Length: 77
Length: 390
Ligand SMILES: [Zn+2]
Image (cartoon, rainbow over all chains, first blue to last red; front, side, top):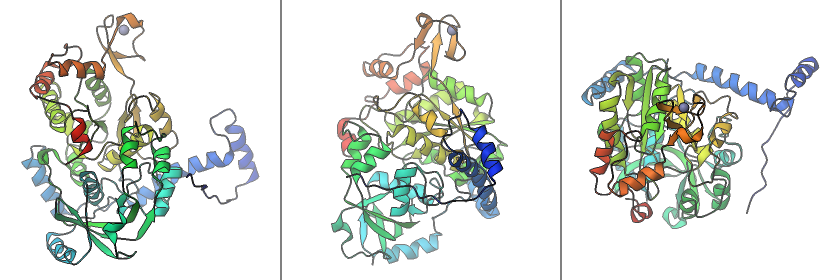
């Protein structure tokens, strides 16, 4: 049986002028609403910033030596 | 710069040898579950960051969110639910918050904190992930046979699964170091479950023309009957690379992960996994991860448009064919000639030739590759093997 679930949404405020500007911009594109466009653009920007912020602490020198050693042994280096 | 791990941090759920020893002792006191080969591979992949940002099997919130929105509960793109199914009898007495031991081949593989035990609707899973509930679809058939309950929670890996291709198994941590040492800034990853024919070679080399390196990463593990055996794929690629690829531009390694045949959703999954390996680009071909005619030939390409935050660039490469007029391998975008000049390489036709022990013509397959394949008495997976994976 298919359950009825919905993606949950909330509201954020943007200036009306920006809203109108986006509305004009997306006319005739694949975007069907300003909200859809804003979600798309925000996801792109947020993912970029988030991953930069969380950028993995590089492996320790010791770990790196062990990795290089294994790669050599297997003939990758 | 190799690509950033999905979600920003490369997950590491492996433990030090000393801690592993202690956890193995602990495991003896815990309820245990024996895993299938596919699930054991998932555990290893989680632990080694192949599935970053996952730290374990999905809890219900994430599971439902992946089904409905193709994203984890925290909004990060994720299209294939990585879930652990169990029979109620296997977890008698286990309560949420308890630790259990996961075994593979009778040996402790990992410890798991059971955060949640929940029911699932396998038909709904099939309808959303495979876009069909037809049991004729190999992924659907396999899903419908899975167990009744799901358990979600983080894992800690205490031992490695045996790998017959150990020499070719690299984890994301290793490829990231390797790519960096080679000085590669752009890396195109190629997913495959096939032996290479000239079409594949063309696509890979087209990508490599514009990137620093090529990462060929075939899947080993469960596949449907009629697909090529793992050792055949590995040996065929070794022959191809040895004779036709500049050694310094290619990294070949295997990934133990089951094919799901989920088409578009699986294409996204394959891309995320290669992003974790450090690839910056991912080659998406015609009918990627598809089977039969369940998906449109370029449906996977469309789905990529829904993920501006994927963090790996898809390379959409059209099917390659040989054009007698052009005198070379080309694709629709670059060849103006009509169909009568075009010789298409059909995987089905190749399979039939190989089954009959015939060597395919050189415009379809490199002779060195063909020889390696034909040396195998039976290069294909049988029905029986697919039904009873070891
Ligand atoms: Zn042509």
